[in-house]
Length: 409
Image 1: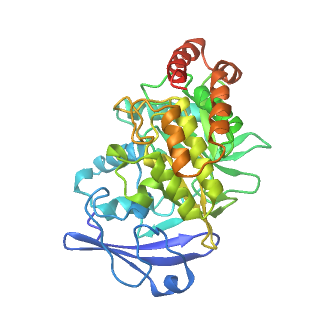
Image 2: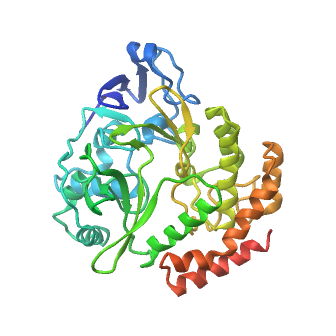
């Protein structure tokens, strides 16, 4: 494709605004803010970008020369697979694409409020979707079978970030109907993301995540609305309302990976970094306490896929930053078998001692109360699981792991 120049826009409501331009210059990728945006806007990535009219560049790693705020727009494993298969049909090797080529696939359909031009066009029609049919199509793709639905999956928004297959959808809670959600939605519909199981996932993975959502809410953790969509065939699909959308308006979204230029697959990040950044970026001590709650929950609940792309911040049209609601909270293990983010330098078996160390450093005054409350909620895992439709086998398996962690408290 050979894209060498991309315009970056931001769109909070009806009108889009030119933010700046990304250019490939020899072996470097440069970004420059537009003069108009410098007068009216707010820095998109305070830790990494200087808010001036000087062309800027960054290191090759961790995002192939892109600033993290733009790398956040790139699809992860599932979206990458769709793009790869779509290109292969045209005899194009995905390895031949440069970083800007990949951003053209994000276009104006990525998470957050950033948009890129030129872009690979996507279908903006809103049509009814059948989750079971999509699930079958996704299974074909994951098995490597030839599928005529690659383009359809991609054009219906099948490339949000994350490892598991996901789609954008519009959900109407009054009629309980689902439509493709890549465009502006009709009145009565809300922007949602719906997940599908990967081949290695258990059949009740959606129910497990629903139980974790309920535990998180009772733990005082802020989350966007979540639910399970049950199909006529008996399948369950986990869905979450998008927190980067307010109606059809958008919020700018920046992951902790993008903010800190952290290689989330080989991270050296500590929860202390996240607590510090939560307070610094939002200028709000409550955000630091909220991040501490998530730290406690992730450790006690065995959520070890707690890498830096699973924490994010939001900026509204007035330039005000806030901590994004928690997401991707579920029973999980990282590829290494321990936490992706360390707790007071402990990746393997952090417990109460490490949590209190962080609380002392960041003046979390109610730390012991928070730990005890979340500990008691996790102790009731079975109750939450049974009310969410989790299988007895999964309940027992997770229960064993949670009890092992409990011994450190």
